[in-house]
Length: 192
Image 1 (cartoon, helix red, strand yellow):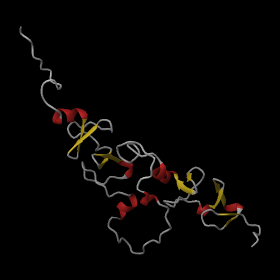
Image 2 (cartoon, helix red, strand yellow):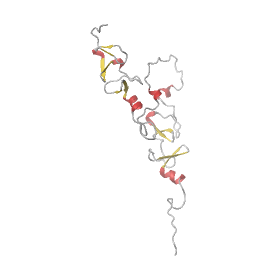
Image 3 (cartoon, helix red, strand yellow):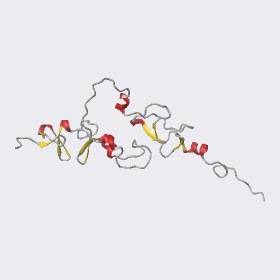
């Protein structure tokens, strides 16, 4: 069938994209309304798009799926990795129909803002923006402190015992080895 004055095909919906509504990314054309993140479905522009092969993402979703992982990247302590984690939650989504029932889910707030985790120190919800992992649990940045001295901790200074966090100094004083030659200044004198 002839292409009567049409334009390129949209990479998202496969329909004709006319010049007035065309957005190009990686030599592919999109309608303005089809230029959306494959995960969260937010509208994109030239400053917010991140492309990976034939897929387009917002920078936030791209970072979660393909960015570095490890301490300081919202994934907890450990070595950095660029392998995707938990691929189920970052798969491209189809638009979903909205439920018609009002307030059918009591944890709607937690679902919307992504938190069901509780901080072991203060027992309140821990959200992604304030989450630090330690001892296998999520903590608020402000609660990520030594239990004994209250010193703020980092991945290089934290030690855990029985699910609680300690700085290395307090851990050594309370749980480290005891006796002569292990930090005690007791020295035996020779009286010949």
